[in-house]
Image 1 (cartoon, rainbow over the protein chains, first blue to last red):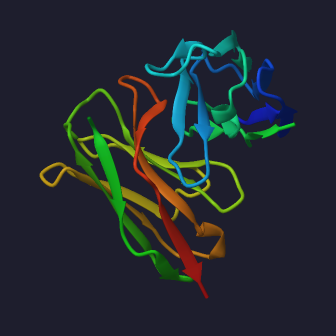
Image 2 (tube, helix red, strand yellow; image 1 turned 90 degrees about the vertical axis):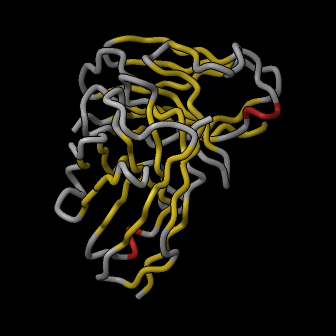
Length: 107
Length: 120
């Protein structure tokens, strides 16, 4: 299995801040990486796929980067609606795995 | 707009079999471009991929669940289903069905999720 290690597990920030979440794969995943936003009582929302491709309808303040085994999700200027939990997911091969999540809290 | 809807019992007894169905509307289930998926989230925990199936019935399962999971598809009803046997309290979770971006494993369409509680 490919293990996904996400950091930090919790992040405190303020509206307007720029924040970065990191996801590290235990082996190369050919950029087959997605980022999701989760809010209580709602289905996950796809933000980024193929490591850096912005899903249609997602605000441009969200961006993804990285290659090989290390990837980042950056939110350029936090908005009130962005406080949520974020997960990375590798889909390089079946046996998909998710990171453990990063909870983004209001400071 | 593609929509997915999970259905099934919200309460299952320990050691019994959990059964859920996902009904697809607003689009085709019979495409070779993607594998339909089941994902779950236990209370207070992270997301876990359970398995995937395509329209022809080809399946892939999470190795940690493989001995207990069966996913099937009924294209005539535009449904795919999940069966998880010998459940325990650790299987209590919100279960989602989902469809990925074409030729991808990143899930763009999700059902609303259904909470399944395993009781003793």
